[in-house]
Amino acid sequence: MDYQQLELFIPNKVDLSPYHFGIPQQSGAMTVVPIFSPDCPGQFTSPLSGLKLSRVHGYGNVELHNPSTGVAIVPLHMGYIQDQAQNHALCRSAFIAAGQKLMFKDACCVQSGQGGYLEGREQWFFILPLQLRFQALKLRGQEDYSKLWKEIERLNQRFDLPQRGHLEQILSKKRTFLTQYQSRFELLPQQTGALFLIRNQLVGVEIAPTAAYFREVWMPLVCFCYGVAAMYAQKHAKASDKPVLPFAASNLQELRQQLHKSRQEKQLQVSNWLSQTPAERFQLKEEERFLSLRLHTCKGKNFAGQLVEESGQLVYASLFALAI
Image (cartoon, rainbow, N blue to C red):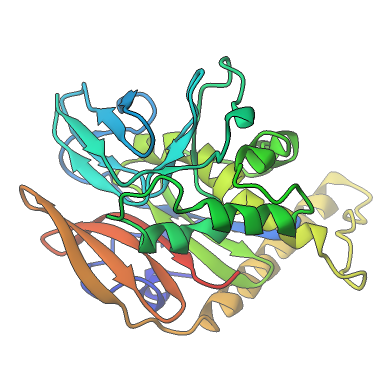
């Protein structure tokens, strides 16, 4: 596995030679392939420690503040849990300069009524579940706080939950199941991204400007974005799916040999899955500029999302499958 496989599903506008893959990790229906690269030059604000929710003005208006000295690339489809107020998610990424604030007037409320607040002590941010991301991306720029409620209702229905526009029915009530992915998958030192696969299908490519940035977006991605899709896949697992059996080793040397063989087989299997992913031809639309940084929306036949590039070098990417 090498960076050339990334070229199948990353726009050819950017240089991918700095990127390389790590050993695939699997838990249930989800497989994660770590991506490594040097940190991008410049100073970038990490989304949890550096980017702050400043205020929510009524419904659908979310203001973020970047109090740090670096530029903030707001993670695509970032959502905030608030104390004593309805929760919102963003439909797009954006740049926020050091010391500046930005009001997102096209945010979407992810609770359709007053009964769905999460407890005030539960303060964290999430990334929208994979099944909601394409609709949210299409609705960027549209100022209508209720615009995602119908899609949330459909997602809740798929999980046999009350058909309401309340995303916390999944993020809160299923949180114990979802957060286990944080311990089942290991975030590695200097990891700047990951490929996410559900069963044998590539469903997401996430790349951050720095390892520190990716470390802070990792849990929202693996637990709440792709974890929800994996939870649904496991819920509908076929009875014919083979269980994972323990190694039949009688000593430490045999265990190491079997573990090495298993890792090689898994790498080959994942490489074959990726090679079967249709090559994308993205339509790119430039959305914003900040100095030499360019934010693009990408739309292909099978994937969509947003990326940031600087003079042909990839800085940030969040691309996801349209059908899951």
